[in-house]
Length: 231
Image (tube, rainbow, N blue to C red):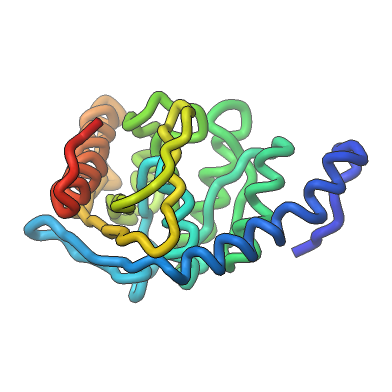
């Protein structure tokens, strides 16, 4: 990866890009090694501990659990779509340090370019990951991107959620979770979602709702496993 900051960023942004990703990587790497992971899976689901055995599949989770997911699935070397903005560049550099790959795009103007990049990653045999309700929400409402990609490629979609027993919850649209040191974290899995290649576009919304329900089941299952109630 070329780590030289793009000329489109100002001096302050280039300084942030040169320093912050390694600081975040170092801090998260240290704290995350104190977390204790447990697995929960609904009937018929296939849990993949630490992402072991993942292939050319699509995986989806809610934006609020980005932090534990970044550490937990780092061995998958999955490809993630990231925007071309300054924030996107910052996120991409942090993800690269954890071994992830990125393609640039968004849910608006360059969304198609991002989907084509993810399709290429799947064709090469690696997994693709979506923060299904990101980057701006609404919370717990998946976008259409995973369905479109599954339709293009025939890949199945895995739904999961990582819920910490103890965490700081940010006052953000996604209620972003920052797990506390030495906490338990449940990796919760729901059943696969399949999108047939011959599915008509008129039924895409039906499949999006099916995927949405699967990710929510994974989240609620994780809460129940920890004896917590939905806020």
